[in-house]
Length: 209
Image (cartoon, rainbow, N blue to C red; front, side, top):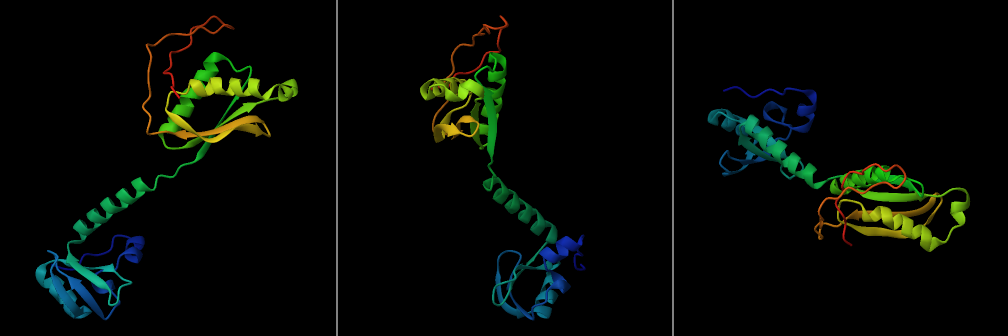
């Protein structure tokens, strides 16, 4: 059996194997995990050929480098599994932003709340801005805080406060993140009616703090 060839330049740069190994000697591991000890690279290559496998450098920075005699296809499969596991643990979270106003309608509030719930389930933090303009900027803080809390109450996902409600350049803001320790409590679905339009608003799950 001849040596396996690289399929791309990227692959060649990432993994040294067979004639691509530069070290003069290697600590060699067999296909079943056997310890063949330190061998001259040419002898290790000959051993791999004898067994019908490839010689793959798996720890190039060790002294001497470590190589394994194994099938390259199997090696690639195992590496992909490891890379996938690492990526799943390195989920990148962002801080998403949503904005509501005192005059935002019920339907729009529920749409924004549902989107916020999706972001929380994906593991993101969410910054909620209560946008104030004109005379609203000078209204009582507790009144404005209560308006913002109304929006938080309809978010269909368990959350916890990451950054308390406070004044911001846009008005009031709060940062929330998913609280995996709490389970979402649901109530029988009802269709609230918007006082402005008389239209039914899609039912939502309620959040219990």
